[in-house]
Structure formats: structure tokens, C-alpha cells
Image (cartoon, rainbow over all chains, first blue to last red; front, side):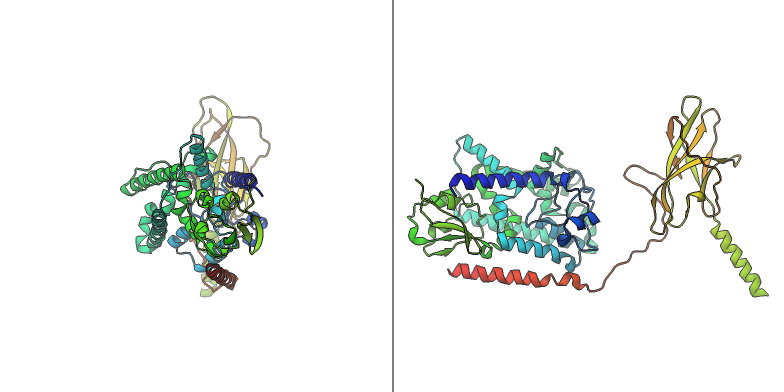
Length: 342
Length: 179
């Protein structure tokens, strides 16, 4: 498979996923806990008695409407209900865990969802981030725009990337901590403003409703806390746009959803392999890597080099000029390998 | 003897209680034109209050004359009693009346109509309950919430694949890092 084919396939999948995730709800009109849902996805249906998502009425900032046809189940990291009239899926894993921490939902009800999440992460690792994530697709469009304008991308040092990853841990930890804290009955009155703290600043919340021709909740200056969240949301959106425009996939180092997917990356079914003797140290793989990783270049021994930061875009495989030097495998079975460029 | 009298009294009391009749005031604005029109409104009842569509009727509050109505039941409570119904009746703007809707087991509607002619429709508010497209305030009495606190192994079996996946992922990660 040559370069053009991999790129073409990836972009096709990205566009299909974007369309499916944004407009899929128009096709699959499924509401919470209905028999239709059970009929559609019997294996994945929400457990009986599971508390469905709330109709939180802070429409101005969180989402235009909470009453939308959605599914209870989802692949590992889906953006939230970005199209309330047609959004297919309910929430990303950060949203899901945060809201259940706040509602103090019984652990048993989380188990089917966590199992599904772990299964998909185990099979595909962070493949989601580059091949299906809708906001990643939006970001790639920004990157394409930069390329069209002949503006070179910025290189960020490894220390900066590690710093972003630590920042991602901080965001995730803070989000879960606040969600759990407001779940305490004595602090329940804070739920109105602190509910789903990360979701309130997530760029997907602002970007994705636009695809459904719906006005996202741009601002809420009702109280000091909502003002803070509004400003933070704008700031994060600015970082998101800047990150994709200048730094390619630098945002993916900061994304908490990607972080949770990355925990399984090293042991995921999708794996990248290198045969060191075939490597001529040209460094093209490092140049091509949108995440700015250098492990595939630095690795001196043969074997799998899955890194937690790798989003499995296969750019390194398609750019490598050496025959069979780099390859992508699925549980040891070769899917694609680098070819000698003529 | 005392017991019999007591039983009869209690039975009568219970019968009276069961034959309870409640009333809702029907409010609407008379149109500017002169002539007949239909008054249409929706009404919601507490669970168990109205078992059949015969158990409510519309009256002129002054003369107690029963007004023929057309009833459409839209929703029912789990016990089979009526939750929500639409009520339509004819009125005339020249002959103004105050209408009331009576409901309960003591009410037995005798007049109704089914054939609808083409007349203007005026929407009414029944029972003075604030009702919009989005919300409905109604008294439902005691609400019992049942919470299942039993240990449910239907869910806990998911722990098995979860730990299995975790174990496999860790093993594979260790193998990959060694290689």
C-alpha cells in the first residue's frame, strides 16, 4: 500500500466518522432506555435501571439541549452530544465517568461501559485519535489550510510534549476530583455550575454543534464561575486552533480523552514494528510524525515500538523509503509495511 | 347491633368518599365574532381519579346544565386510570356561560358528541394549572420510588473480561517493551 492509498483511506475514514458522528442521530433515532435501543444493540444496551444523562438546563453554556436522541454506548473517546438534534452518541469517556462520579452511580452500572471502553482500547489503542476523532478531523483541516498557505509547522521539543502530557493528567485529575466532590450531598448545590468541568471547556462542545447548524453555548456570564468557564472555554479553543494550525497534532498530547486511550497503547492489538537492520537513519519517520515522536527513529533493536503518544496514523510506515523496515500489525498479522520508493 | 350500625356508617362514608366529585374551572376568552365555536382544552388527572371517560363531564356552573363533550384520551396511568385527555365542547359567544369540568367516580356523563363540524376553535385552560408545551404542574399525591439495592451479578460478570483485558494489555506491553 503506497502513501497515497493510506492517506486516502485515512481521510475517507475520518470524513465518514465525522459525518456519522454528527449526523448519525438522524438515521438512528434512539432515545434512552427504549426497547428500540435494546433491539438495535442488544449486546451493548444500557443496563436496566441505569441513570440516563441529565436534562441539565444550563443550555446557554453546556449544550443547547439535553433531550436528544442518543445511544448509551460508544467507542472509547467520542465527543459529546455535539449535535443535540442528531448527535448519535452520548458522550466521551471523560464525560461519562465525570457524570457518574457526580451522581454517585453504583459501580456495577459502570462495568458494561468500562468493559466496552477497555476492549476497544485494547484492540485499537489510540487509533481512534487519528482515524475517527471528529475534532481531530477539524484540526487536520486547519493543518491542511496551513500547508496550502505554505506556512511551516513548528517543532516542539520532547520536554514540551511531556509537559503537555502532564498537563493532560492534571486536567483529567482535576475534572474527576471536582466531579466527585460535587457528588457529595452537602456540596450538591454546586452541581449547577461545576457539573462536567472538563466538558465545559472542551473545544468539541464549541466546535461540533456548528456542523448541525446549531449555535453552541458561546457565553454565560451569569455568575463568576460561569464567566470563568466561559473564558477558559475560549482560551482552550484558542489553544486548540493554534495547536493544530502551527503544531500539527500537538493538541493530542493535551487531550484527556486521548490520554485515557493511550493507557492501552503499548499493549494494544494494533502495533508498529521496526526491523532495525533495514533502517538507514534517514529520519523521515520523525519528520512525518504528527505527534513529533522520535522513538521509531531512535529504536536500535527489532520489535514493537508502540508509544503512549502514538496515534497510529501510519505516517511513518508510509513515508519510510526502506522496504519492510517499518510495518503495522494487528496482533502480529501484518497489515501494511513500508515500501521502497522509486 | 352497634357493630352493624358502625359498619353501615363506615360503608356509607367510604361510598361517599369514593363517589367524590372534583371540579375544575374551564377558562377561555370569548372570541370577538358572534356565533358558535368549539372550546378545546387538555386536562390531566391524578392516578386513580378517573377510571373511565364517562367519569367526567362539563356543566354550566349556574344552571348545572350538562354540556355535550367530545373526549379524546391521550395517556393513561399504569393502573389504567386516565392521565391526560382532550376535551372539546361547543359554545356560543352570544350566550356566555361559566363552564366547569367535574370528575370523579360520582360523575356519570350522559351527553357527548362525536361529529365535528367546521367551527373556530378556542383553546381553554382547564383546572387553572400552568401548562405549557414543556411543563405541566399537577398534583399526583404520594409518590413511591422503588430502589433495587440487591447485589446484581448480571453486572459483576463484566469484571472478568475487564481484568482479562487488563492482564493481556499489561502482558503485551511488557513483552513489547522487552523487545
